[in-house]
Length: 603
Image (cartoon, rainbow, N blue to C red; front, side, top):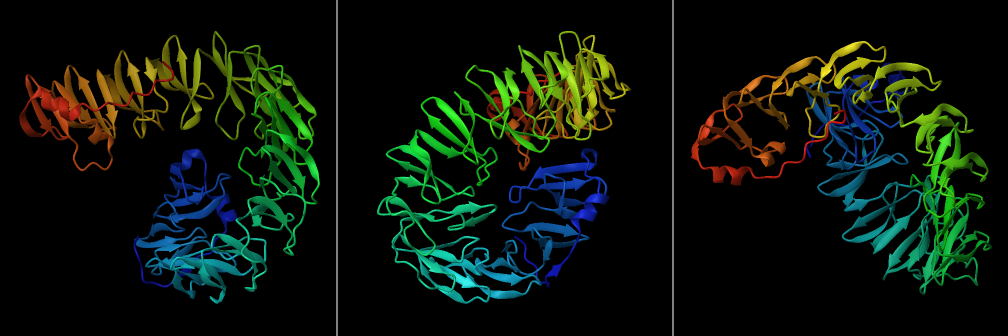
């Protein structure tokens, strides 16, 4: 990672104002990818031609002001602007100091490292805690950070004072507590945030709990601890909470103040007052959260071959012979779609009241909309959350067009496909097949009389309906083009304008990593994605080493060619690098399995 010796500068910006002035529509996005460290999207816009980051709600997290920016790694992203290079943090703080890594700010301080040692800077960029530690944790509301030095752990405060000496095996603190835990000889003890020891080193384990988005030991009630092989609960005053209750396993109390407990391989649920609300008699009990939320909205109970779903109030809302319950939303309300014991799907609300009768062949997914595609008696249509048919259930298939502003659907039956809106008004019809263009969902590859073309939503012809095939998205396909086939010959069109860039005149056409190995009039050559001839069509056959060509980082690409009875090694321009090569040597150098070509979905 590069280093710079300049002062730290903070740039403030308003995401809200920028969101209003920046076009984040798909057509204005030149490139985007998911950032593994933040979960945001790293995006290059067409206008302005700048990089930035957005979240899944299209809110701007890092403004579009950079000529280039890397993904985040260890809290930093390399950035470049106006010829200057520097690092930015996830708060868009531009760090041009001599730091190798940085973390996020909490309670006014952020961790930074140099030479594998960590300290803290304040929001002006000033180093306020020296780089003394091998690792550090973020500060929490108790005013402490867990740190490690020379294999030992302890806690420091925001002034850098060691509140709990850095001499222990391990330490942990949670976000909502003023009590921390410290481990010695593989046993945990409790300390307060002033460094006072509250218990002996007695506990094999102390369970973390969640309260909202924050972690805690005691925020939801007594803490779950393990001592002498059994799980018990401990009050914040360090006294046993329920003296007579010991378990083989026990979770902490969750945000609903419930703990799942297990004894003699049976499960139940305990309230934080020590009363059982679900007796210990079930094969299994677990939090049921489709998105991994640590604050459970539902609990899944298993007993034999039956599964029950309880809501946060522990009321049974669904029961099935399968353990799959689809949590879905409509009109900002939460519902559950599942299969009943008659093998039919329906929907209930969070109190278990039937909302959509159990009549359907497949799960219903409202996913925040007022509608769901539904299937009954092998026919599809669309219903609303009150089971009203918005589009009759009489079609072979129904699919929604991927456009956030319009609710449009492709309906397919045995004769034709058509596009309708949610009122079942026909928008586009008259074709045997209609398929949204991958990167422009309101443009359509259509099929009529076994020929393909491209039209828009107003049925204006963009590409004449005269082709044998037109590709849509292909995994190993060209970066900015789509394949077209006419009279058995292959070419390319631009994926945005749909203009022909490579006429369909080639008998063979293999795209590999920016190069097209083609054949025309029984002669082989190489062209690029714009149709420019790179290697003249003078060979009988061109055989690339696929491992080299697929590898973006390959320094040299081994390409072999046949002319008459002779084999050569050539470069991509056709220059002969080596002559008098035997066929066995060519086969040895190129006999690498090629990934199968992706199917053309509309052929």
